[in-house]
Length: 149
Image (cartoon, rainbow, N blue to C red):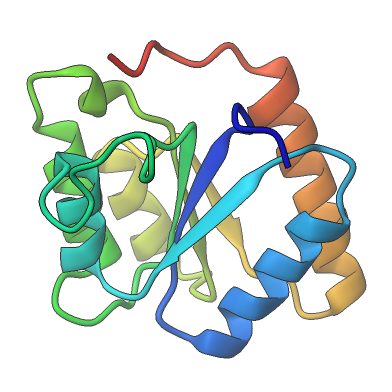
């Protein structure tokens, strides 16, 4: 993996879901580094660059955040709201909700808070692999991302 591979910040508390997403990315054609955090507080600390994430060489700013809604300590909604209220480049950071909820109230709330995309977790490994391929093609190759500094 190259030192300049984009970082995807995966905020997911379920170890099985996280492992499946990480495996799908590792099978994909795009070179990407997937960093997993397990709760909303860790995500905010990482994005702020708080210790132990203060070394941006070792813990680079992500190109995009994949965020579950139901997280310990701070929900995905709370993380998203925090990101969108920042006064620096973080407020423009692409955030995709990747969650099991298909409730329209959750979808609407995520968009009201400024999510860039809302995706329901696929039910099969094949569907997840296809989703990750499409995700990588669009968000990491086609999409023009904002500056991260």
